[in-house]
Length: 70
Ligand SMILES: [Zn+2]
Ligand SMILES: [Zn+2]
Image (cartoon, rainbow, N blue to C red; front, side):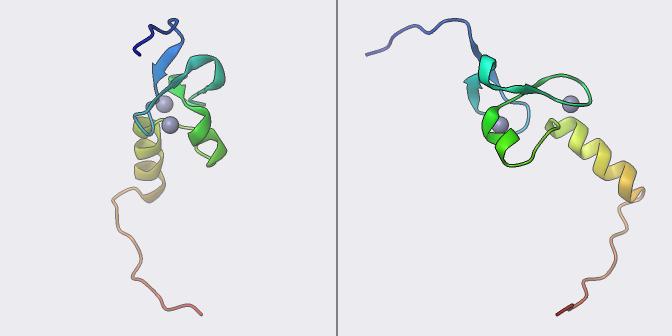
């Protein structure tokens, strides 16, 4: 039951799943493939770019202490 698919599958650079390229989206930063599942979850960047953005946003990785906001 192994049917060869068309060359339409790509590895999502965010979750690592192999999904249909025609249903995916490009990373807004580098243009690499992001699957539709990630897009639905609000992910628009690949793991690389997300890490970069997080690092840039937090420059130094000094997170504030966890507050019990409630
Ligand atoms: Zn994905
Ligand atoms: Zn990217």
